[in-house]
Amino acid sequence: MIDHADDYIDFLNEAVTPFHAVAELKRRFTASGFSQVDPYADWNVQGGDRLMIESADRRSLIAIVVGEQCPAHGGYAIVGAHTDSPDLRLKPKPTSEAAGVVLLHTQFHGGVIYRSWLDRPLDLGGCVYNIVRDDQGKPKYSENSALPEVKATLVRARQPVAVIPDLAIHLDRDKNDGGKINPEVWLNAVLGTGTRDELVPKLSELVGHDLLEADGFHLHLFPYAPALRVGVDRSIILGPRHDDLAMTYAGSQALIESLEASSRGRRTRVAVFFDAEECGSMTASGAHSGFLRDNLLRLTRSHAGYVAGEMDPEQAFAASFVVSADMVHAHHPNHLDKHEPRHAPKINDGMVIKTNANERYATTGETEAMFRAICERAEVPVQSFVIRQDMRCGSTIGPITSALLGARTVDVGIPMWGMHSTGEAVGAQDLGRAVAAFTEHFCGLRE
Ligand SMILES: [Zn+2]
Image: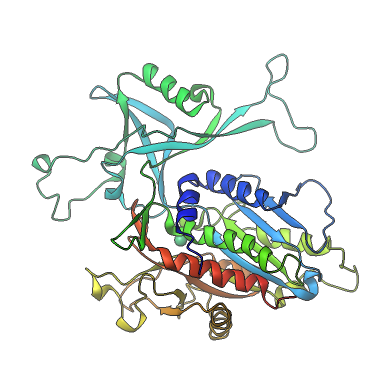
C-alpha cells in the first residue's frame, strides 16, 4: 500500500481554513485535469469529463468524474467529508488594547478544546471582502445577478502572529483540579506589544492585504506548528484538523488515483467536501442544503446520455452509494474504559464502520455489508465502532446526506486520538488504507 503520510502532511499544512482547504483541493484537482464548471452557465457533460463545482461561499467543493452511462441509470459513487474543524475566529470588531498589548477577540467554531489553544504559536488567515466601487466611488452591482459586487481575497500570514497565554498556576491554584476555562475571557489572543495603530498595519503587511479597509471578513486563528510524524516508527501523524481533513484528503486523493485505475468508467464518481459540519451543516453549502443534491440532478439532466421524458434524474439516487467519511475515536491507552472493548478501534489497524441505533450514523446492516465488500476487494482491514451506552454519540454528514438524497449510505472513518484538540493523532497506515478503500469504491467494476 502506498504511504500517503508525507503528501497528506503537505495538504494539511496548506488547508488551514475551509477556504484554504477548498483552494488546495482545487489546485490538486486542476493538476489532474479537472476544470471548474460555471454555475451560471448551461452545462453539457459527457463520460470522462472531470469537473469541479465550488460553492458560492468558497468553503465547499464537489469534484466529479463523469461516467459513460447517464447517472439516471448508473448512479453515483460518492465519498463525502467535511472541510471545517473546530477553531477560533475573529469577532467583527476584533481588536482591543490591554496590559500593554493588542488583543484579538475570538469566537469559537464547533467543539473547541479550549486548553489546547493556550501557549501555542498561532497563524492567522481566511477570506477578506472588499466592496467594488465605480469611478465615482459608489458601490457597483453585478450585471447578471441580484448581488452588489464584492471582491474576495484569500489571506494567510504564514507566521506565528499570535499567542493565547495561559495563567500561571500561582494565580490559578485549582488549575490541575478541573479549573474552568470561560472562552469569553480566556481565548483572546495577543497580537504583540504596542498599539493597534502599530500592529494592525504590520499584520496587513504580513497577510498582503489591508485589513483596516476590509468591508467584511472571515479570519481564523490556527496552530502555526506544522503536522509531524511521531513515534520511533514514525507511525503516528500529529497535527491539527485531522477531523476531517484526513478524510477530505483521502476522498480527494482516491478520486485522483481512481483515474489511474480507470480514467473512463460507466459510473459517475463524486467526492464532496462540505463546510460547517462542526456546527450542524445548516448553511448554503453545508450537508444540510441543496448544494449536493441540486448539482447532481443538474449533472444528470445535462449528461449526453440523458433522454428527457424517458428518464428521471432522481432515479440516480436509487443506484447510488454514499460513503460518509469522518474520523473515529481510537481506543486510548490511558483511558481504556472510554470504549466498550469489542468496539474499540485501534490506530493503524484499518478502517472503521460506525453504527448507532439512534441513527446518529447512517450505516445500516445492508450498507455495512456493502462497505465490507469494497474493503475486501481493496484488501483493507475493517473494525467496528459503537459508542458506550452511557455516553453520547457524535454525528456526521452521513445521516443528513442520506436523508436528502434517499441514497444508501455508510458511515466510516479511521481512528484518532484527541479529536478536536489542536494536536490530534492519526495512524499513518490507516490513511493509505482509506485512500485504497475509497479508490475501490470509485472504480467498482474495472471497465
Ligand atoms: Zn468530523
